[in-house]
Length: 150
Image 1 (tube, one colour):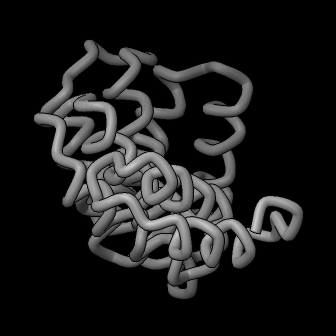
Image 2: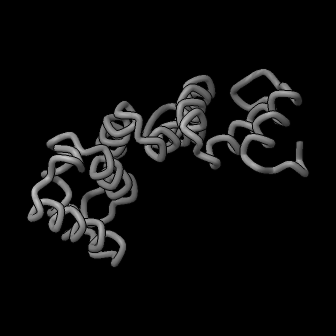
């Protein structure tokens, strides 16, 4: 179920789930958002991933967090792509893998996610997970809007 084909009632439940998450009522958010995640909604999947990753309203589970984050990321949800990249960069929920981190940050950066551009720039600047490339780092910093660093 995507945002475009929800009924008014479903839209209200989804919005209530997001509001519950933002109000830190995580058990309620899990209850409201799970059906949407199970039906393939990338935003809901991302929210569930965060809750499982941090044990918010559910028992913490690295594998379940990764699975939900990946499902969302594979639907081109940029913040989830950034999340998968971060998991690989830091070795959270999965084994650390710089090349996979770069792959996912690049996907999110290509969709205009400034945080992913900045993270990639830093990785290229430091040679973290990629071969050090100052020119590439400057290009990414500039794309992210940091002209003074380019």
